[in-house]
Amino acid sequence: MVKITIRPAGVRVRVRFNGELIAESADALALEESSYAPVFYLPRKDVKMERLVRTSHTTHCPHKGDATYYSVCNGLTARNAVWSYEQPLQAMLAIKELLAFYPNQVTIEVDA
Image (cartoon, rainbow, N blue to C red):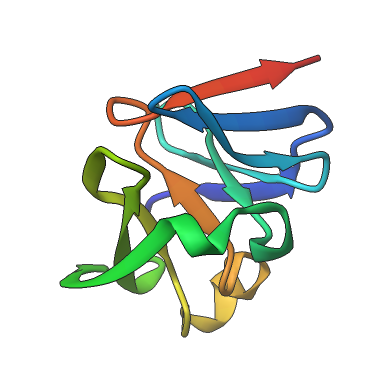
């Protein structure tokens, strides 16, 4: 059984792409799963949604549900760099509609 914990991150999280601040939040959640690094999920209110374009890409996680994806666009494009569980499984409702970013496609900064 995979252990997943979700908690308030307790830090300010910033996401940059192509030199632009795309997201900044003090309300991020940190999701910890197995031995993976924590993943920060940010509220949409703290993300420049006008820079995201929903794609047709989807994935399924047996523990969280179906993820939808967005590309970040601002002169350059980071394809499918953002994901969201818009209808997560019951145990994962805390991350419903929050956004997570792939750290290999954007720059994620965390202030303690």
